[in-house]
Image (cartoon, protein in one colour):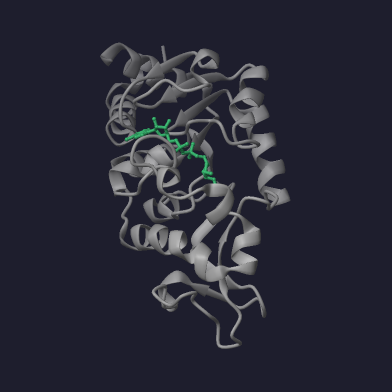
Length: 251
Ligand code: OAD
């Protein structure tokens, strides 16, 4: 493990321009459940049903059963040491941007500025009738469903199944992936496309792929190496290594 931390620190310093792609595992130490695997959200709710835009449009009270559960966790969550480590990496000038599949807004809260929210966010809602936009804390999520003053139902500003990825998020992610020297692949099962294509684009363009995850994923064979463990623990170790040992790492 110690060896891999040093290797990652060295690869980051060498690459200069790095990109991080993050998934639900990134926020586990902030108390937010992942989607897949044991205890994951999809064990309880069928995503094609509860997470589909059609359900939100035709039966918003049903979609909000799952959304309320997600929003409750998101509202109380705080960035964990992994988020803070990525904010440090950006301040130190190594991290060009984060492509996040997460909708919890925790990278913003940790202080990162260059963030592509690939699947939108759930910190804001938009009225599906009049387009009014509010912070999640400005509405009552316990209403079934939460409604605007115009009586339209609110939709979290996230990408639902059946919806397209925002075109700007997609094109900028592709461009960042093509031009980075290394990519950190953090806490994602890497099965949902097109987000899962980004590490593949980076790898084809010659970037070093460093995976951080307690488990192997479908992407592990493509990665240069996997640092097995929770990102809330591994990322601060890598950043500390860079901070404390920069002179030795850059030779
Ligand atoms: P998943 O739930 O598919 O995968 C979570 C990953 O996090 C798994 O590979 C876990 O092994 C890993 N993990 C668990 N604990 C961890 C920890 N402490 N530190 C680091 N990694 C940990 O979540 P995503 O890959 O993010 O889309 O899922 C992608 C998309 O699927 C989501 O954005 C969502 C869902 O459908 C939409 O909502 C559009």
